[in-house]
Image 1: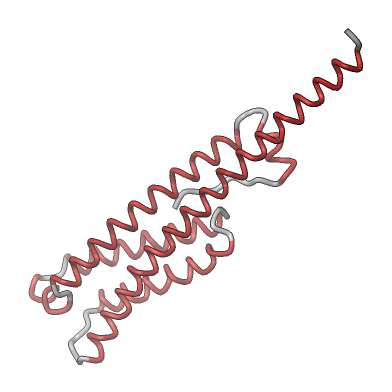
Image 2: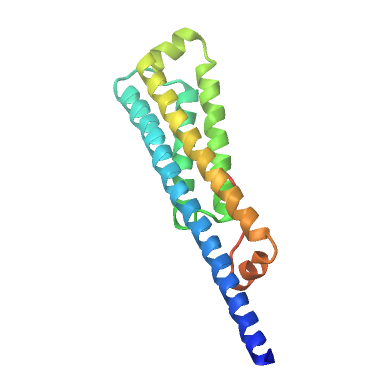
Length: 177
């Protein structure tokens, strides 16, 4: 067998493998971006629910508990973190900021519903609590899908020999939210 034939065959084999590995990384990254857009939409709906309800209650001169105002502030921080993460959803710093904002919002919600029942019922009617719970289920499902996409992407990026291509083409690890 001719040495040039073997060399060309090996070069074609390596090039074929590299194209397949690169396409896999691109496909997994795109899946993560799509999962983020679903998460972003679910979070925006939930945060808009909070802002519209708190503002309606304030206009109706119902006394808004301090925890309700904190929830409004935290929902605004989630929206701001989403704006940052929107341009680079798989950026580690953006994901970290969004994760922190979501944790703070969840804590505010727990503090709000832990108030005495008379305060909670006057500020948060059952219909609002039901809507929050429905949005929360959607957000958690979307968050779980996004996090699984990030895990799959990171695993593929870190496998040898795809990790060499990831370094060459600048694929960076992402953080779950």
